[in-house]
Image 1 (cartoon, rainbow, N blue to C red):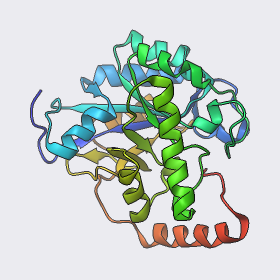
Image 2: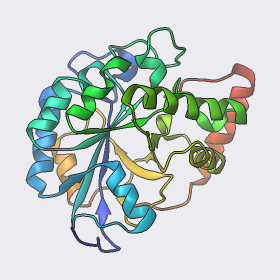
Image 3: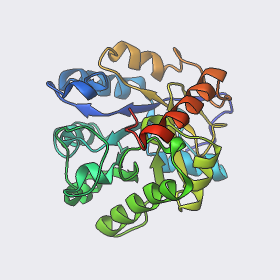
Amino acid sequence: MTNVPLHTRIPVLLYHAVMDDPPDWIAEFTVAPGEFASQLDAIVASGRTPVTVGTLAAHLAAGAALPDRPVVITFDDGFADLVGPTAEALASRGLPSTAYLTTGAITRGRPCLLPPAPMMTLAQAPRLEEYGMEVGGHTATHAQLDTLAPGALRRELRESKAVLEDTLGHEVRHLAYPHGYNSPAVRRAAAAAGYTSAVAVRHALSSRRDELFRIARLIVRRTHTAADVERWMEGRGEKTAPYPDSPATVGWRMYRRTRALVRGAEFAG
């Protein structure tokens, strides 16, 4: 373990479901099992050292050491494949990862904005840790956090954290914003809720100068191949965080906030 050079580009991959026949609403962000295996093999062949978000966050927060060429693998939501074939594919290659769970989607009877899909259950969350996965929160209902009133925002962040901590028996420190939607107010609320890091999307490479509560990730779509992953492992193909929000991003946030005043909380997707 050494101090990572300032210019080092760090790929943080974002996966959702790994399945052959996904529901239409998540199909764009689903990888077939065979392609997933090829992408994991590309990560192994790259020579990068996989670490959890917690390890990267410790570096960003306090300069804790990282491997020379780190890579981070993350999963959002908690689809059914995660506990089983996906976790097994990672474990068989010695690849640690971080899984962010939407508690409303994996708990019977709790409200959730995610459309129907095969999901794991809350009771299975401890099994992820047995496979070597780090577990983080992905809110209670998967709402667009940057459109919520302060009270609703606090509930989204704190309820999911409390539910996961009660199930796992330890603190849950890391958060993923649904669909990456965040703002300065959301980032402050995440810290106030007790999270010590948060990941966005941004479709960019992270770096040792990245923002602790807006860590950039590369979203893996069904059109991506092992060749794309190889390019990311080389630190090529996308821009590198940190960088300010574009005017288009700010404008889109303002539009969604206005729409939420009329429609109420909406699914972040």
